[in-house]
Length: 395
Image (cartoon, rainbow, N blue to C red; front, side, top):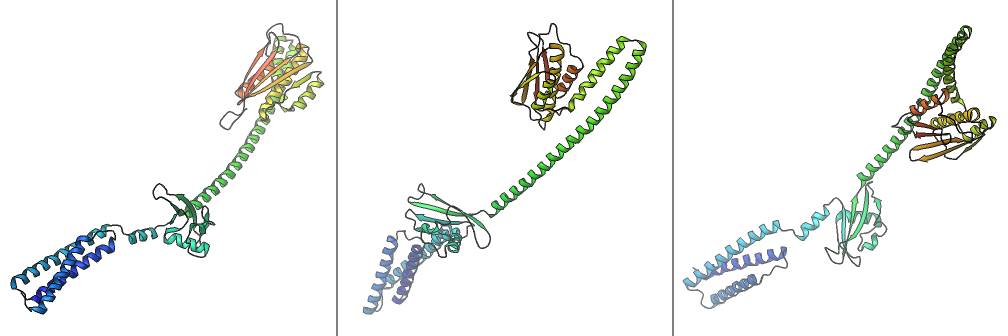
């Protein structure tokens, strides 16, 4: 084999080795290439030796030329294989450029800055937002003080929320600022708020309708009750006239009880506020003492008013008293009403006639209770529950 051929192969081996070194260093600057640099130096010296020998003798020994060419071919194959392997590793390795490209493709703005505020890395989205709002590409996070920590709107109408946090635990002396696209979240919240407002208005309208419906039903029931009372009173009076003509005293007592029961319903139309009750009681010669815990619901007020006036009547008629005390306690969802007088103590148990009997039925229809005590003194105790949407309604 000729000297020039061996020198050409050796020169090619040196170029392959140099290509491998440069390719490796371009992807990994920290990689140690001492062995490769030594091999490159050896190839360079061999090439220099061959070139110098060619000027003196002109021809190398055949055996020396063959060995040199064989070694150079091995170097070429080795360098080619190393380049292929390095290329495969670099495809799987995350380079600085690929990292920057990945950060730029994120759908949120992000930047990293040193403790003194100098920006280290900023992606394209953050760069666009910052330059749009500040008029320039920022070099420090201090230039973003006007928009960081709040929500801004870009020129396309998207809303971005800026948040800054320290990442000392991960990267010492660094902070991270992100800008999140919160357009959909804000629109969703506004839509939910509008729907809640519309639902609230609808509920208020329904509540008003229910109240009007309840008033209408009460009016109709009141009318039916008046008609029934009128008919009952008419029939009872006719029957009483016949009994008077026949002289049937037993039948007259039962009819009078019926009339008392009917008349107790007629008391529903009187006033139900404390001052009016005091005036009515005063007309009957009774001083009425009432505390301030008066029920707000008008149906409960009507029941308490009827109970008070019934006791005022009985105080004058049966106990001979001139003072009635009404104590009302509001206990959670219940009202406890205690009514007593300064009249004489009942000699026996109190018989519930038409007035007290009708009052008890009305109270129990509303889910309440009534207890009458005669010893050691007269006392009426009534317990009523406040009305709610899921509870009874007094009929």
